[in-house]
Length: 89
Image 1 (cartoon, one colour):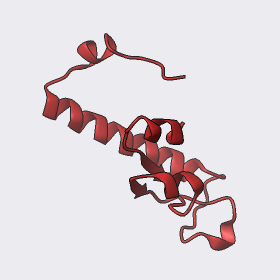
Image 2: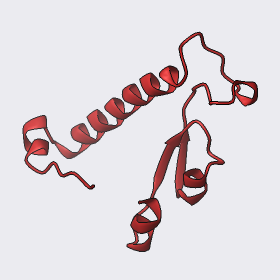
Image 3: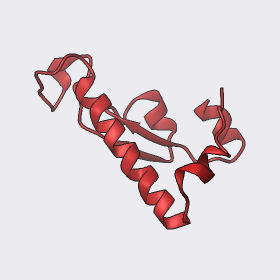
């Protein structure tokens, strides 16, 4: 999907544990969030949480903050946004 988006001129931002991943390499911008990669030995973060829980929780908070800020800057509310909601699949 990232390659297809780029072929149409879109910018791609990857939010990831691993900026060196395939999608990280394709992205125009990368946001690295803390998490525990599958290979614990190579990770710089340690957590007692199972598998990807730390990343998933951080991701949820990160995206909520980004969306709230965008809503504020554009004068949007949930009702107006819901009317334009689309599934890209």
